[in-house]
Image 1: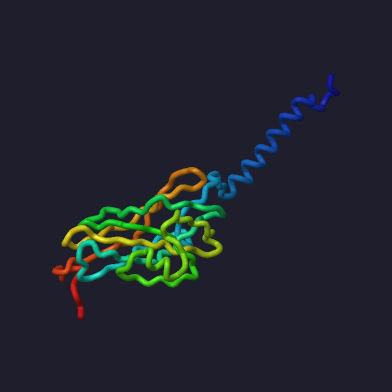
Image 2: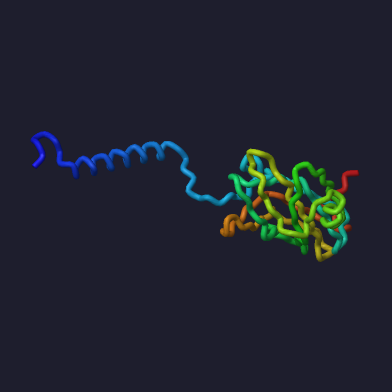
Length: 195
């Protein structure tokens, strides 16, 4: 039997466990706890392209156009593999033909040549897996797209969805990157010629 005024040992153990748990709840509750452990694809600063995009006039069907300069990175150390890039609400037969990533040091021009041509010129391969392993706090890589249209109509989208795998989990990220390929006869709205 314990002396009077001193709780039994079992009570002290439970009291200590409760006190430690309370301290942990207070400490963790005051910080932003990151439960997930898989890096997510984002833009530097964690934002969007705000919306941005590119447009071309007098585009016939089937001609490939390539664009670079879309900065992406992962929000924590690790890597993500891009599985696909899709247009959001495409119209006029717009399709994304190919995608890849290039190091930040590469200067990439936007024109009507295939991505493989750009890759060969700048010494990087766009035919293999598109790996994003640059942590946003350290820089970024360029997301590269090749797109075309299948019709004589003006083609456009409202953004892109990047599908990727990170530590075995499938994710997607939407970006407000708009593409506009104006039909040769289209002179209205966004396709007007102001020359």
